[in-house]
Amino acid sequence: IVACIILEEGANMENLSSCARTMAGLFERLRCRIVDNRWVEAEEFKVSEHLFEMTVSPPETITSVLGDFVSEMLPEDRPLWHMTLVHDKLAKRDMVIFRSHHAVGDGLSLVQM
Image 1 (tube, rainbow, N blue to C red):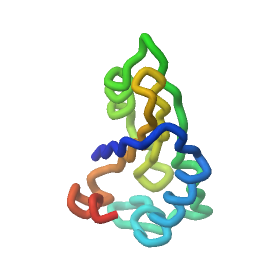
Image 2 (cartoon, one colour):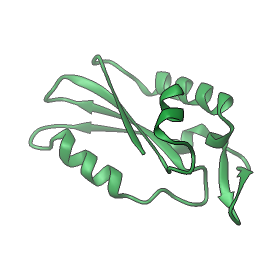
Image 3 (cartoon, rainbow, N blue to C red):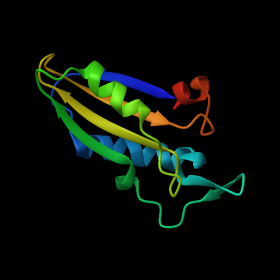
């Protein structure tokens, strides 16, 4: 599942990290991984392992970057989600892309986050 949130220019990793820590504190599955078909709290869970940042500059487009982004497998050795802060220089805006495995939650439950 992929969700994109478009922001004004100027978003930063400190704010994204704060948001992700809050979300992981509220939603247990963001701190869990699947082991033998059951949810297990991840040992030494670190929000920072789920946060990334990138800049898209012409001739790249956000569409081409998103295609690559969603086709990558999520690592199975940690909780099945990540957030990426994308700075789009052409559009002069920032975007947060949240990606999770469908086992973490369906679209409706993720909207409630």
